[in-house]
Length: 112
Image (spheres, rainbow, N blue to C red):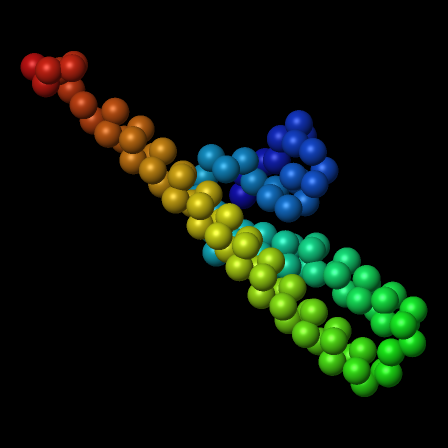
């Protein structure tokens, strides 16, 4: 795992603690997806609980709503994180391919 530069903001270090210069390993991908899913879903759950308590909602109804919010938040933000990770890995791969192509050219512009 690469070292984290300290010039990134706190939010950036929490949500995507990697420089973006290397592809993420499966373990790093899982970490980013889990952090995003939890980071954005927990405030939604807390707001739902507060609104349910303020509205004096039936406990069973509140639990059902909390379950829906939990599943929807985890799926939505997990999928968003998976897209961010795949985009990062794709851009790293393309950058590496173009660098390899530039390194493999010999003879200058006209191939001589």
